[in-house]
Length: 225
Image (cartoon, rainbow, N blue to C red; front, side, top):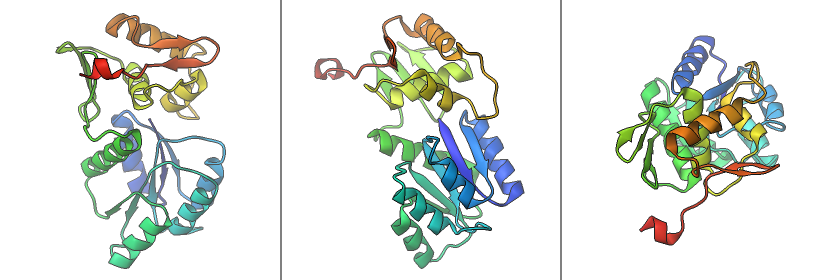
Protein backbone atom coordinates (compact mmCIF):
# COMPACT_ATOMS: atom_id res chain seq x y z
CA UNK A 1 0.00 0.00 0.00
CA UNK A 2 1.26 3.44 -0.94
CA UNK A 3 0.82 6.42 1.38
CA UNK A 4 1.53 10.03 0.51
CA UNK A 5 2.33 12.07 3.61
CA UNK A 6 2.21 15.89 3.51
CA UNK A 7 3.61 17.23 6.80
CA UNK A 8 6.02 20.14 7.27
CA UNK A 9 7.18 19.30 10.80
CA UNK A 10 10.44 17.40 10.27
CA UNK A 11 10.51 15.45 13.54
CA UNK A 12 6.84 14.51 13.34
CA UNK A 13 7.15 13.60 9.68
CA UNK A 14 10.16 11.38 10.34
CA UNK A 15 8.27 9.61 13.12
CA UNK A 16 5.20 9.02 10.96
CA UNK A 17 7.28 7.77 8.02
CA UNK A 18 9.23 5.40 10.25
CA UNK A 19 6.04 4.09 11.86
CA UNK A 20 4.21 3.60 8.56
CA UNK A 21 7.15 1.74 7.07
CA UNK A 22 7.16 -0.56 10.10
CA UNK A 23 3.51 -1.22 9.24
CA UNK A 24 4.61 -2.26 5.73
CA UNK A 25 3.38 0.88 3.96
CA UNK A 26 5.46 2.52 1.26
CA UNK A 27 5.59 6.24 1.99
CA UNK A 28 6.38 9.33 -0.08
CA UNK A 29 6.81 12.36 2.19
CA UNK A 30 6.39 16.01 1.17
CA UNK A 31 6.98 18.97 3.45
CA UNK A 32 5.19 21.42 1.14
CA UNK A 33 1.79 21.16 -0.49
CA UNK A 34 2.35 22.33 -4.06
CA UNK A 35 4.92 19.61 -4.95
CA UNK A 36 2.53 16.98 -3.56
CA UNK A 37 -0.28 18.27 -5.77
CA UNK A 38 2.00 18.08 -8.81
CA UNK A 39 3.23 14.59 -7.86
CA UNK A 40 -0.33 13.28 -7.65
CA UNK A 41 -0.90 14.15 -11.30
CA UNK A 42 1.45 11.33 -12.27
CA UNK A 43 1.57 8.90 -9.34
CA UNK A 44 -1.20 6.80 -7.74
CA UNK A 45 -1.52 6.31 -3.98
CA UNK A 46 -3.90 4.39 -1.75
CA UNK A 47 -4.27 7.02 0.96
CA UNK A 48 -3.05 10.52 1.89
CA UNK A 49 -2.11 11.71 5.39
CA UNK A 50 -2.29 15.50 5.38
CA UNK A 51 -1.36 18.33 7.72
CA UNK A 52 -3.44 21.49 7.26
CA UNK A 53 -0.77 24.00 8.35
CA UNK A 54 1.68 23.86 5.45
CA UNK A 55 4.27 26.56 4.62
CA UNK A 56 3.23 27.23 1.00
CA UNK A 57 -0.43 26.41 0.45
CA UNK A 58 -2.93 25.39 3.11
CA UNK A 59 -4.03 21.79 3.46
CA UNK A 60 -7.55 22.92 2.55
CA UNK A 61 -6.32 24.39 -0.74
CA UNK A 62 -4.31 21.24 -1.42
CA UNK A 63 -7.43 19.13 -0.91
CA UNK A 64 -9.46 21.33 -3.21
CA UNK A 65 -6.79 21.15 -5.91
CA UNK A 66 -6.37 17.37 -5.87
CA UNK A 67 -10.12 16.78 -5.84
CA UNK A 68 -10.48 19.20 -8.77
CA UNK A 69 -7.87 17.24 -10.74
CA UNK A 70 -9.77 14.00 -10.09
CA UNK A 71 -7.80 12.39 -7.25
CA UNK A 72 -10.12 9.97 -5.43
CA UNK A 73 -7.74 8.60 -2.79
CA UNK A 74 -9.00 8.76 0.82
CA UNK A 75 -7.49 11.57 2.91
CA UNK A 76 -6.79 11.56 6.64
CA UNK A 77 -6.15 15.03 8.09
CA UNK A 78 -3.70 15.40 10.97
CA UNK A 79 -3.78 18.88 12.47
CA UNK A 80 -3.48 20.98 15.61
CA UNK A 81 -6.55 22.96 14.52
CA UNK A 82 -9.32 21.27 16.48
CA UNK A 83 -12.32 23.59 16.35
CA UNK A 84 -15.62 22.35 14.93
CA UNK A 85 -15.29 24.90 12.12
CA UNK A 86 -11.84 23.58 11.20
CA UNK A 87 -13.12 20.00 11.07
CA UNK A 88 -16.10 21.01 8.95
CA UNK A 89 -13.86 22.94 6.54
CA UNK A 90 -11.55 19.97 6.12
CA UNK A 91 -14.32 17.47 5.55
CA UNK A 92 -16.16 19.80 3.16
CA UNK A 93 -12.95 20.28 1.17
CA UNK A 94 -12.79 16.52 0.53
CA UNK A 95 -11.18 14.88 3.55
CA UNK A 96 -12.46 11.49 4.69
CA UNK A 97 -11.31 11.53 8.31
CA UNK A 98 -9.84 13.97 10.83
CA UNK A 99 -7.41 13.44 13.71
CA UNK A 100 -6.16 16.23 15.96
CA UNK A 101 -2.67 16.59 17.38
CA UNK A 102 -1.29 15.23 19.63
CA UNK A 103 -2.23 11.73 18.53
CA UNK A 104 -1.10 8.15 19.01
CA UNK A 105 0.45 6.52 15.94
CA UNK A 106 -1.55 3.36 16.62
CA UNK A 107 -4.72 5.38 16.04
CA UNK A 108 -3.28 6.73 12.80
CA UNK A 109 -2.69 3.16 11.60
CA UNK A 110 -6.22 2.12 12.64
CA UNK A 111 -7.78 5.08 10.83
CA UNK A 112 -5.81 4.34 7.67
CA UNK A 113 -6.93 0.70 7.76
CA UNK A 114 -10.54 1.84 8.23
CA UNK A 115 -10.30 4.18 5.25
CA UNK A 116 -8.84 1.43 3.08
CA UNK A 117 -11.62 -0.96 4.13
CA UNK A 118 -14.21 1.66 3.29
CA UNK A 119 -12.73 2.18 -0.17
CA UNK A 120 -12.63 -1.59 -0.68
CA UNK A 121 -16.26 -1.95 0.40
CA UNK A 122 -15.41 -4.08 3.44
CA UNK A 123 -16.81 -3.62 6.93
CA UNK A 124 -14.87 -6.53 8.43
CA UNK A 125 -11.15 -5.82 8.96
CA UNK A 126 -10.32 -9.49 8.27
CA UNK A 127 -10.10 -10.73 4.69
CA UNK A 128 -11.38 -14.30 4.22
CA UNK A 129 -11.02 -16.15 0.94
CA UNK A 130 -11.37 -19.93 0.46
CA UNK A 131 -9.65 -20.91 3.70
CA UNK A 132 -7.16 -18.04 3.57
CA UNK A 133 -7.47 -15.33 6.22
CA UNK A 134 -5.49 -12.10 6.11
CA UNK A 135 -5.44 -9.81 9.14
CA UNK A 136 -4.20 -6.31 8.11
CA UNK A 137 -3.89 -5.14 11.73
CA UNK A 138 -1.66 -8.06 12.75
CA UNK A 139 0.02 -8.43 9.32
CA UNK A 140 -0.67 -12.15 9.53
CA UNK A 141 -1.91 -14.73 7.03
CA UNK A 142 -3.32 -18.17 7.76
CA UNK A 143 -4.46 -20.97 5.48
CA UNK A 144 -6.90 -23.50 6.89
CA UNK A 145 -6.02 -22.20 10.35
CA UNK A 146 -2.25 -22.62 9.92
CA UNK A 147 0.07 -19.60 9.95
CA UNK A 148 1.70 -18.92 6.58
CA UNK A 149 5.14 -17.31 6.75
CA UNK A 150 5.29 -14.52 4.16
CA UNK A 151 7.99 -11.97 3.53
CA UNK A 152 7.01 -8.30 3.76
CA UNK A 153 6.86 -7.96 -0.02
CA UNK A 154 4.85 -11.17 -0.45
CA UNK A 155 2.36 -9.92 2.13
CA UNK A 156 2.12 -6.55 0.38
CA UNK A 157 1.42 -8.18 -3.00
CA UNK A 158 -1.25 -10.41 -1.48
CA UNK A 159 -2.94 -7.52 0.33
CA UNK A 160 -2.90 -5.35 -2.80
CA UNK A 161 -4.54 -8.13 -4.83
CA UNK A 162 -7.15 -8.81 -2.13
CA UNK A 163 -7.91 -5.09 -1.81
CA UNK A 164 -8.54 -5.06 -5.58
CA UNK A 165 -10.39 -8.37 -5.81
CA UNK A 166 -11.56 -9.08 -9.35
CA UNK A 167 -9.43 -6.31 -10.86
CA UNK A 168 -6.36 -7.02 -12.97
CA UNK A 169 -3.29 -5.22 -11.60
CA UNK A 170 -0.37 -4.64 -13.92
CA UNK A 171 3.19 -5.38 -12.90
CA UNK A 172 3.95 -1.65 -12.81
CA UNK A 173 0.96 -1.02 -10.52
CA UNK A 174 2.18 -3.71 -8.12
CA UNK A 175 5.72 -2.33 -8.26
CA UNK A 176 4.40 1.12 -7.31
CA UNK A 177 2.60 -0.33 -4.30
CA UNK A 178 5.70 -2.25 -3.16
CA UNK A 179 8.59 0.12 -3.66
CA UNK A 180 9.25 3.80 -3.04
CA UNK A 181 10.54 5.97 -5.86
CA UNK A 182 14.11 5.89 -4.52
CA UNK A 183 14.25 2.13 -3.89
CA UNK A 184 16.10 -0.26 -6.18
CA UNK A 185 14.27 -3.37 -7.32
CA UNK A 186 14.98 -6.33 -9.55
CA UNK A 187 13.23 -6.31 -12.92
CA UNK A 188 11.44 -9.56 -12.11
CA UNK A 189 10.67 -8.78 -8.45
CA UNK A 190 6.88 -8.97 -8.81
CA UNK A 191 7.05 -12.27 -10.69
CA UNK A 192 9.23 -13.74 -7.93
CA UNK A 193 6.79 -12.65 -5.21
CA UNK A 194 3.85 -14.10 -7.16
CA UNK A 195 5.73 -17.38 -7.61
CA UNK A 196 6.38 -17.65 -3.85
CA UNK A 197 2.76 -16.83 -3.01
CA UNK A 198 1.52 -19.57 -5.32
CA UNK A 199 3.85 -22.09 -3.68
CA UNK A 200 2.67 -21.13 -0.20
CA UNK A 201 -1.06 -20.54 -0.83
CA UNK A 202 -1.93 -22.59 -3.89
CA UNK A 203 -1.10 -22.37 -7.57
CA UNK A 204 -4.63 -21.30 -8.57
CA UNK A 205 -5.04 -18.41 -6.13
CA UNK A 206 -3.43 -15.74 -8.32
CA UNK A 207 -4.34 -15.76 -11.98
CA UNK A 208 -2.05 -14.36 -14.68
CA UNK A 209 -3.72 -12.37 -17.45
CA UNK A 210 -1.08 -12.66 -20.13
CA UNK A 211 0.23 -9.31 -21.28
CA UNK A 212 -1.90 -7.44 -18.72
CA UNK A 213 -1.14 -8.44 -15.12
CA UNK A 214 -2.41 -10.46 -12.18
CA UNK A 215 -5.71 -10.90 -10.37
CA UNK A 216 -7.48 -12.85 -7.65
CA UNK A 217 -10.96 -13.67 -8.89
CA UNK A 218 -14.04 -12.61 -6.99
CA UNK A 219 -15.89 -15.46 -5.37
CA UNK A 220 -19.20 -16.60 -6.80
CA UNK A 221 -22.25 -16.53 -4.53
CA UNK A 222 -21.98 -20.32 -4.12
CA UNK A 223 -18.40 -20.01 -2.82
CA UNK A 224 -19.39 -17.26 -0.39
CA UNK A 225 -21.95 -19.49 1.37
